[in-house]
Length: 283
Image (cartoon, rainbow, N blue to C red; front, side, top):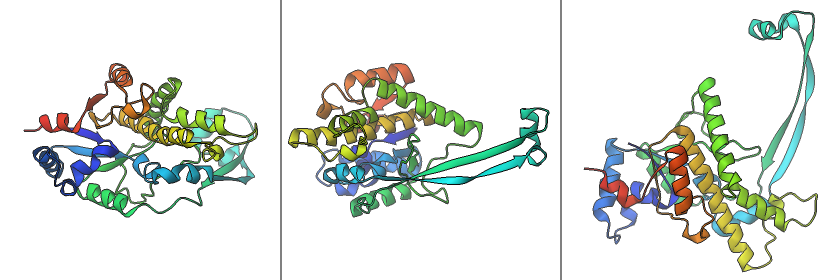
């Protein structure tokens, strides 16, 4: 069974020793053993590191401090005779040159702190059990996990398989955001807090006027993480999404509230389970 673990249940599965007073000791041991023995193949979203890996109180300031720099690449001209045969054949007959130019955008977050030691310990415990990281929905300037040797991420394939994964992740995330859920909530809040037409939405995330707006921003970050986790889960075709979150903190406007869970199940076949549900499926 392939299972995506939400942040709120990952430690229960990977580090049950942290919960000696939890009354679900049998369930914790059962799920942990299933991961260890291979009966469960586990995953978690990289948003646990890129978004939720920042302390809740610091997220707005870190993202508000995002810098974006652009680098223009020199224009290059390639003669038809120097093009790969496949490309030359696709472009057809004739005497022509191909002109190539480009711009690289690079984002930085100078206020982003190192991962908290507890988050690092969670990563290490998950890795020891073979739990893999799910890529996020591709976004310009997005942060990710550096994994040059492929030890952490679940592979998305290459060529047509990779293109299909990206198309699927984008399609699901667009549907989530079209319903006013996921990443769209943070963008909308940022725009509402921005001071002028030229201000960027992310630079305004630390401009909350009072505690109520600050709580809104905090919930919107969590909603972003949930929405992207589900989009990746669906794009990878994983069997079960395990979470303790029923979206109560965001009333009826959460991708994980009961109504939207039903929509995701009906539209994409997402199978939701609580930790207890998951344990009950195991022998």
